[in-house]
View (spheres, rainbow, N blue to C red):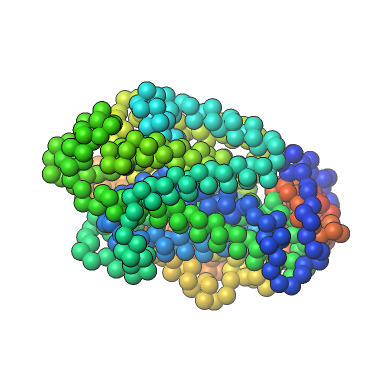
Length: 552
């Protein structure tokens, strides 16, 4: 055991500066909209990952390919996402630490570094989707005057704008992202009103889990919906965002109340995100289900945006849509206004996802590696990896290759999802860590089945993809990667079932300030000092540690 000593207070940035909300103190029974408003923010920031350009592209492709038949998959994928976010909420609220920090304490060095690499790849992949979506939006809104590679480079500037906005406090940043979500709801809702999908068929698609006449392509698209909706880095992000509200962990009622309000807010946020995704899928399911290229080409020639007609060949094949062609088709059928409003919605989707990826990257790096970079350095690191391959494809290939990258990145998110779900399921099931808030047996079984489903989908993706490659020079490396993937997942499952990477002592519920009010600042508990655990030692004041335990 290490020595017991308290670390000095952590210096807080303006974003982390403590502000008390006017809540009844101590916690009162019953529901309070005033308290819900004080807890509102983290869930809507989290929900932005459900609305990024990758999700929008998955939605419109599902609608164009299967009509309304896959709406129920969208609904249940969102429910599965809520279950994963619920675990992230509970972990952050009960322990006061985010998922990355607890991974640092629990796993040995090698698997911990591998986990970090997997999540960093997911973050960079997500950032690439945001860059692609923003570049396409600029191209649509400028009628092609801004080339795709130019739109990619513009995304460097917009990230700096968000960093500037970040200096004015978390609440203002949350409000700005709320504005972007509102813009997406209005723009995609406008398309829904203009197209006027058949409401009865939409309701059937949502609540009747069936897919008559569906084949392999529809099955792969359904799997793609799950990969696009549930993103691994979002679980890490949400477990850290809930730390922006200081909770008196000396009182079980206060922890229960925080869990309840955060979950309520997340339900509202994901309901909004579901509606926005529903708008997109229903619009393309109504207007462009099984449309032929020749029909779209002829429609565009006779429209006010006839210069776009050349992107659709004159053949009888079913039209293949992406976020670029989707905007063009809307413009051809419903007027130029529909195209520009679509572009605004895509721009809002790309911009809103930019900073969530930045925050996720910062929290993951600080948690796993105990490295503290400025947000500017973190943005430079992530966006450099995202922009370099994207700008090359945008400069030397056409838009179809750029949107093809979007599809591939959706599959990548699905493949990496178990590396977030398994750790959060493991930790929230540990009674010494979570005490009275550990997962119940039905909860463990449910989340294990969900994780098994995701892993089975990923293996199916790889097995389905292998026959498209010709030659053992592709089969052998991919087979080795698949074996390594299965082995690492099995290792994480083994640790969750009783193997231990490092002993996690029971948490000591930390006593907050006497007022017991909420505070902003995700790093109130400070960095790990001398390998100490946040869960040992007595209660300390704000920004202090008690380091009475060291990881072997």
